[in-house]
View 1 (cartoon, rainbow over the protein chains, first blue to last red):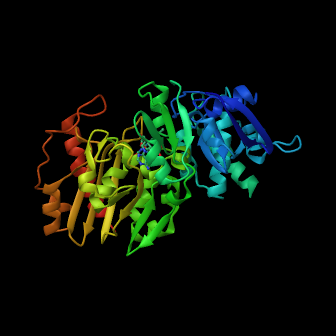
View 2: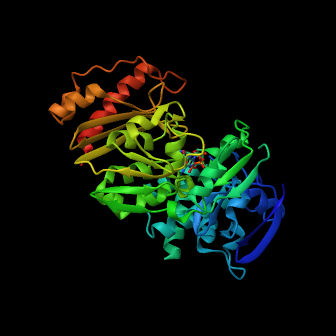
View 3: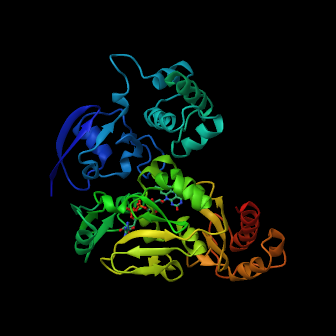
Length: 155
Length: 263
Ligand SMILES: Cc1cc2nc3c(=O)[nH]c(=O)nc-3n(C[C@H](O)[C@H](O)[C@H](O)COP(=O)(O)OP(=O)(O)OC[C@H]3O[C@@H](n4cnc5c(N)ncnc54)[C@H](O)[C@@H]3O)c2cc1C
């Protein structure tokens, strides 16, 4: 049975009709049209769907939209402010932390959450944190460099 | 996913009442939602524990800790109380899945699910934890009943898990290189009542105690005490990831490392 769900996404109050089985990522992409959040594996492994819910990184393919009722959600589209990229996005661009770009939204959202928890992460801590974010193109070298630089820029 | 109804429970009593028949509780959803996507389950209704504040939080009590069922792995990993009373438990929580999984997955869900490769069951059994439910208190030794089987009855909700503090403990996990679940995980605890050793990831019936290790380590809490103890591969899993013999070998290696690292 369809039901209405309401939450704040990137600072805006939104609501829409969903089924209980509608995933948060489907609500974000299909109802709200925010397609920056990707679906890669759909099996909770790859992390391209990472968004922040109430300030914490979660896999939006493994959360129901109804579970996010009343929550504050931040997606990749919410990071840039006044036409200016977030320092972590800027660092990914500067350090070429991507090739095809498919995993990038999840990488950036995970990275921003990492820096919230650990202002000055070591290379090892960055790699460890990326356990749930898979990149199929280049490997992780430039992504790790970008995150280290992004962390400094966010300080 | 098949379709289902959804109800946000306001209290444990609410949840227990609603979670009967074909209805199912949902906590962090990190196991249940992937299962639903694969259409391996078809609940009529999901009863969400996510709104019950009483189920979240960690209390330091009598030297040990009591962890509310809806407390996430990330919260356990960060908790000063857990780090102080049972540092091995904080490290175990930090090693579950990835950060996003740890931000949603809960101790209650992990224990209720009793995945044969999950980490928490080993901690519960080795530390002699008590699983507190809406109905009763269950000793960890009596709680885990085999693959994905527990002592929980229909409509019974886990509310907390209580861990007494050991003198020393450590958990060593040999990760499956792909899934990062435990191929073999060994939790060793030196407690007032003796040494307890629990093994996850390896047994055909899920978590089990390694009594021969416990006997040897109770005499002498030293990794060398395990040298002479044979590990039989009988009853251990054999799959594409590892043979039973390899798992038997790893059980001893991981146990020795845990003894060496215990504090
Ligand atoms: C990519 C990935 C990697 C992972 N890696 C690991 C790992 O390395 N080690 C590990 O141990 N786990 C791992 N997990 C599993 C994770 O720890 C889950 O969080 C946990 O198994 C289930 O907790 P949950 O809160 O998400 O429960 P849910 O998925 O919501 O529920 C699981 C089951 O428990 C029942 N249940 C939930 N709460 C209660 C309660 N309070 N009382 C009674 N029944 C209840 C539900 O009805 C359901 O049957 C991983 C998961 C993913 C997606």
